[in-house]
Structure formats: structure tokens, C-alpha cells
Length: 277
Ligand code: KIV
Image 1: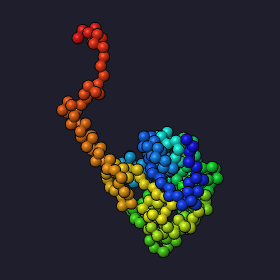
Image 2: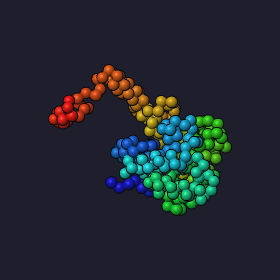
Image 3: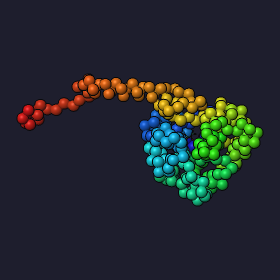
Image 4: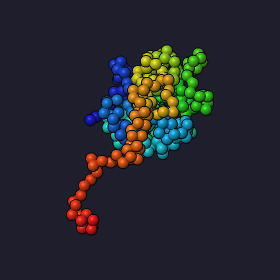
């Protein structure tokens, strides 16, 4: 089964074919997502919140990201796996950005990396791409800058902020990204940016005018119960299903109705007899 390529993703924009992307953090989930044919799997630093229980993405380390990227790449054989570069692993210098991007490819087995920011990271994007590593951009609400943004607020609402976001998108496009995530952006602004850049835009809370959509897998499966973001649609309620299943198991162990013969193993009675029973 051939791996999807970044040129195929870029061609989807030209052909008007919508692009679906989901996050994954483990082998089993990545395998299921891959089976559906979804072409892009992001090992997002949302890992910090939905898997590791941090209250933001800021504490996530590159070692944590690589650990989960390795698991996802073992499960996904067809989709492009994108490793999300965590906070402060690409900001210090072009050299730092290059070295850490390479770790996602060499150690993590990913096919691409994602980093947050526009004009300010364009020099890093250009160098990473020049070294043969596909890069996905991410602008709008950039959770690694949450302390500066002052919360999970919708971005680009003033004329200045909207113009700056368009400049960021163009800078990423020119630097060579293969796609740009637009997070928590008014739908009309996301549509405008989508028409102004040559590469696909992948929206999350950015309306239907983007070339594609990305969601955190735990949000669509309803397995993250701390909060449900406005941009998410729950296609299942795994938290409820899990709670019922775990409670049933707990009750059956306590009452002695689990395990039954069906879940038990037999042995030759003569062996027991030899033990004197
Ligand atoms: O970390 C993440 O899951 C992301 C997506 C929300 C785009 O960056």
C-alpha cells in the first residue's frame, strides 16, 4: 500500500477534493484511522492535554512527542504522519529547528512536521523544507502562545489582526509549506486566506470554506470529558461507553460472575493428580 505524498495533498486543493485530517497518539488508533483512508494523521501536541493531563500544550517535551510519534508511525502505513514540534523546540535558531525537525523524521518515523507561527518562523520553515522535510504551518489560535494570546480566543477579528494573519499565511506559502492549519478563525477570513494561498488550508474552528478539516480524535470520539470545544462534533460518546464497561467489569469481579469458564483455561487432570490433589 503506497504512502500518500505531499504532492497528492496539494493536488487535492486544485481538484476541489476536501481533505480530512485527525490527530492520533497511539498505535491502535492510528491503525484504525489509517484503515479509513484519511490521508493526514497529526501527532498533535494536544497530546499534552488529552493524553498526558497537562492543562496546556506548553509542558509537552520533544521526548514525549517522539515516544507517541513512534507508536503512531507503527500503526499508520498509508497516511502521512505529521509530528507536531512542541513549544520552544524550533524558536531559538534555524539550527535548533532543523535538528529537532530531523528527529521527528529519523527517530519518530514521521513523514512531515508541523510548527506554529507565520512570518516569525518562515526562515525556519524554508530551511527545513530545503533539507527535504515537508512542513505544515499553523496560524490563527496557536496554543503554544496561549499566555500571549490571553486564552482560547477567536483570532483575526480586527482589520489589523486579519491583515497580519493573511501576511502570515502568505509568508508560510512562500516558505514552502505543503498545507496550513487555520485554528479558531472567523469562517469568512479563513475562506479569504484559502483563496489567497496556493497550498491547502486545514481548518479547525475555521468554517467550511477551508480546503480540509482537522479534529482532535478524542473530541470526535467523545473520549475526552474535561470539555467539548465549540468546533468539535461528537460522533460517539466513548467516555460514557467506557464508564459503563468499566463499571460492569468492576461489578462482575466483585460479584464473582467474571471470569466464567469461557475466559478460563483447562489442564489435564492427571497433572493435578500428581500434585496430590
Ligand atoms: O495539537 C493539535 O492537536 C493541533 C491541532 C488542533 C491542529 O495542533
